[in-house]
Amino acid sequence: MSGCRGAALAALLLAGSLPVCAQSWTVKPEWVKAHEDFLASDVMHGRGSATRDEEITATYVASEFEAYGLGFAPGMSGYLQSAPIVAPSLDGHATIAAGSVKLEEQKDFDLLASGTEPVSGELQVLAFAEVRKAKVAHGAVVLLHGVPDDLSAAYNAAHWLRHNGAAAVLLEGEGLDDFLVQLGGKTQTGIWLAEEKPERAAMTLAVLKHPAALTAGDPLTVTVKEQTSEPRHTFNAIGYLQGTDPSAGTLLLTAHLDHLGVGRPVDGDAIYNGANDDAAGTTAVLELAHALTSGPRPRRSVLFVCYGSEEAGELGSLYFGAHPPVPLKQIVANLEFEMIGNQDPKMPKGVLLLTGYDRSNLGPTLKEHGALVGPDPYPEEHFFERSDNYQLALKGVVAHTAAGWGTVPTYHRPDDDLAHLDLPFMTQAIQSLVEPVRWLATSDFVPKWNAGGKPEDK
Image (cartoon, rainbow, N blue to C red; front, side):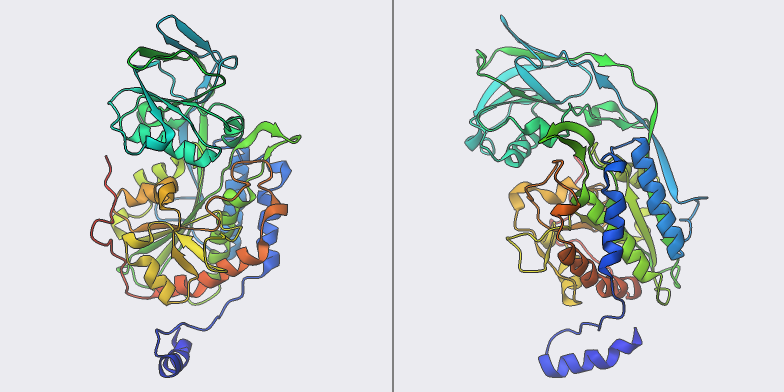
């Protein structure tokens, strides 16, 4: 990087600003498209979490890591980290009972997400507009009515209620017909790591198909019946670039390689390709590996990781955090890439949003060194907590996600395909990160949480 010294001096003299190193590596759009052509193809069946298609995807990523010259991570004998999971299925005949009222799944409601045990609580009725101001009784079943057409907002409200003590959430209102489609067309049963307690995955969320005679204060029970399931695994693809200074720490670059698989058809298409979510992020990790292995070895080591089963509850990153190939205290920063395939209309042209931008000094520093990143304009969506970076952040690692359009219309739909990607934007976004990431891997800068920025594991 010594070749940047003259350019840096000129920049200081002419602009009075911080130096930005000249581009020394070009990300070619045909490389970006080639990854997407494979990852988001119909033959991959949507790369469902903990499926054979996810394993094939992880194997593809591993083969690219090997081609770029990455080695095995410390303590590993290959590029794949495999984790056994428990994946129960439900019989599709759940019931909701409150007094004399009994509702049946499919006929009266759609069960969107559920654990495998019955859930009971006192019914609390809230309007959507007042949900974040209300005090939720611990263990209550909340009936949330007046839900708007914005399905993402409804889903976030349900998660907020769950996080604040609700045992289950029932949704009632207009515009919810496509909710099950957004979740892949089938109930999310919350698969979990075999080494974890199953209650981590337990969330009960249902949409009522018609108004029900439910009364606030009544005890209400949601009952499901579990079916047995075959043992399954999820797969993380991990490549390692060893740095020149063992004491300098390790940089972690990540994305998730799974998506929703095959689900409920929309306009005749049942394959949820996930070209943007998150084949785009996987492509970014691959091309950054391509760039960093094509120059001098950096001072810091770099781990390139593409996680499995993010869509099923961030299981790949959870397992990685529990079984890291290097001690977590050695990881100086984690940069996750999620849905970078489209320009967000709320962001300046060409700029990615960085979740939790104000929580640490990582984003502003990368921006000073040329990265096209800026603050997340959707704080109400809680994107910082909704991607794999959060699992590492909870363990103290300064970890953020770089993303494109946070509320893209193709989100969790079959039309999240190659035809709906903005490949020039995506290529430019990856290009803008090459030299800032190379600088981070070579410098002695250690990112820090700002006061109050580090999340706490509750």
